[in-house]
Length: 355
Image (tube, one colour):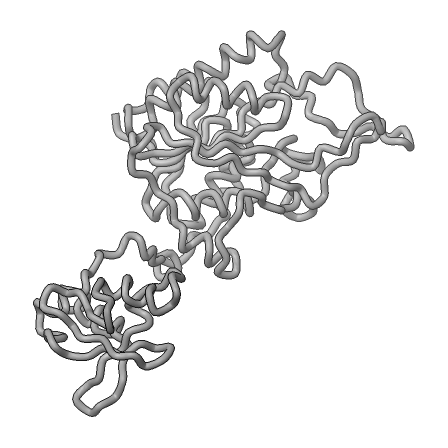
């Protein structure tokens, strides 16, 4: 079967997942029913009714029934996911611990749990417990130890060049972002595009296949299209399919040049010795340390010698920095034919271009 890319598939998520080719999907984002167990209507202090999640798809008879459902859709998702693939599952205290335990029982390997901290949570109107101000997202790989996508540099760039943490402060969907139908919410649990943007940028690449088995209002598809990813949505409610399709049709994909991102870990590694092998530097030449101008001699095996220390460009630099971690490519300089000092990383760039 050919993957039905960029389509919403109507039907039961378990049945549709079972119909897809095995090992065919790169990333799954799942926003399953939370089993909120609401039994009564909710009212604000002014006695206005709260528009709570009371849809039939979120109602289960008991925990056992919910667990059986959860195991089935997770097993079907596991089958569709590539061995190198990862899955994101979002939930609240009502369900996420049960979901996480079942994921571990099935063999998923948890990489992170992310806290989506809501900047504008709904208050606890009855005043009997703390305001629920976050949801939890489990990020797991299908197969422990397999290679998986994590775009570390891109997530840092998204976060002002700081390593991104596992607590994400993002607002709920409100105002113009909220999809409405006839003046009311089109879907009661619409997720913010900012959340999916971060997830897809972190764990997928251009052209990857993103699957959402609980497609709802189509946030996953909209963001995937914007970021140049393929998507597959599964949804059983015709009213949601109409909303999602209209929404995705209106999305303009980002231009290709804006999606070409460099991840340093994915670049081909260049050993310092390769510069000697290719004549860009020669044994016996000197390198100069950035901080204090100390000189090191290049040895024929690619090591350098500075005083009593002989090691790699990184090892010698570390010794000169009193053990602080340092990238040798950034702190050693050579002299060109005119006597100008130039950082050796420029030679590495030249080598990559020639290669």
